[in-house]
Amino acid sequence: MTRSISPSMAPVLARLELDRPGVVTTGGLSALLDEFGIATPSRIVAARLREAGWLLPTGQRGVWEFVPAAQAGAISSSDPTLAFKAFLSAHPNSDCALTFQAAAWAHGMADRVPSRLEVATPTGALARRLPRSLMPSAFRPVLPTTVLRGVPVLLVESVLVHLAAKPSDLRSWTSAAEWLPALAAELDGKRVLDELASRPQTVCARAGYLLQGLRPEISDAIRDQHGVTSRTWFGPRGPVRRHRNGWQVADTLLPFDPTLLEAVS
Image (cartoon, rainbow, N blue to C red; front, top):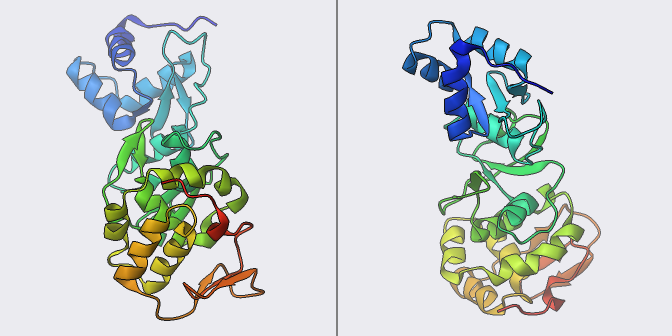
């Protein structure tokens, strides 16, 4: 498929080809038009570029995927993070990050990217603003996030604590059993304690329970710092799959016994 280039748009496309942005926003397009002295409104330019196949919709108003000339026509790159990038471009101060299996995939610890990327949002209100192609879970990390695959991602210690804080938000603990050992192997004990410092005792107990087999030394450090004061549910209240007196955890959720997982430290 041949995509046309009008003479007036050539400088704009040349800059986009040079920068290779994953997504283009109305604001970014306006800045380019101002830079090159093009008076045409950005919405009209965006419409022309869409018609010519240089921009593809992302599902986010005012945000498009840029399709460089190297691609054989108006074909999406199929970037798994595209929907998240588009949301972040439209909401640059949203303070969201990949979590759970999506984060494990971004860190190179999970072989498969989930069909809906899991995103940690600092508030429930922001979670409700995410597009349906993303899976929100309200969680505010203490540690800073990192950038992987072009998007913010929780550090492994924050992912572990998020699992402990919202265990029922994870879609598949069976899948988690495949990448949890690799994640646990990368945990820094001090950073785990820093992420847990202001959390409820129930979150600390779940984190310690999860790490009893994989990282017993971190599990013991959590116990030393936070103790065990009351019964904690791992999952919704209901029939108990297993009970561990050491952490007073009533586990109704996990398809595996974390205390029997082989140590990775």
